[in-house]
Length: 112
Length: 112
Image (cartoon, rainbow over all chains, first blue to last red; front, top):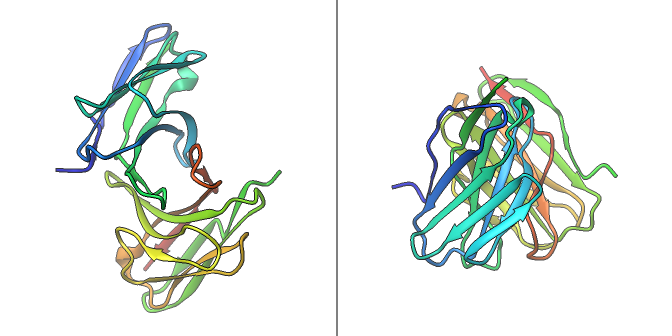
């Protein structure tokens, strides 16, 4: 079992729809959770992070965390073709070295 | 406002050759990391430096060495390159235990 699991996709949604990206993790001691966006041939860029159970909203993006279920998700509202990319989930263990463990990513395609 | 700078951007090596990947950050970050990214494997941690003067192994350290030259610079060395080290290498940094990584633009390495 991988420490951080994501469906590889592709997840295809029409423009204007809500895209829902999911991630599960195995280490119950994980403290913080991150979503990165990576365009093809580019480096990952941070979208948002979440530490506490519940929802955190930033513009069109909402991160949801459920530590009891070891589940974190990213919702993208009003999806745009420019949102087409691979989305990486990353988890920080209870560790002062702040090493992030990454999932293999979900590819999102937003159809015009 | 360069952020994290990696050199070179592309490199082709022959099996057995050596090289050093350079990384420098100008954000006064304490911790720096080297990851490799392979198709379907996500980002895997090679080595990290939690603070100036310290380095530690990550998930896949075999065949690599690192040097934290000063607070700004963290280099990755391949002493005897192997085809299995063909990958995209990313350097990342973070302030003291806060937020997410900032990534460099990556080095695409091919070993033939």
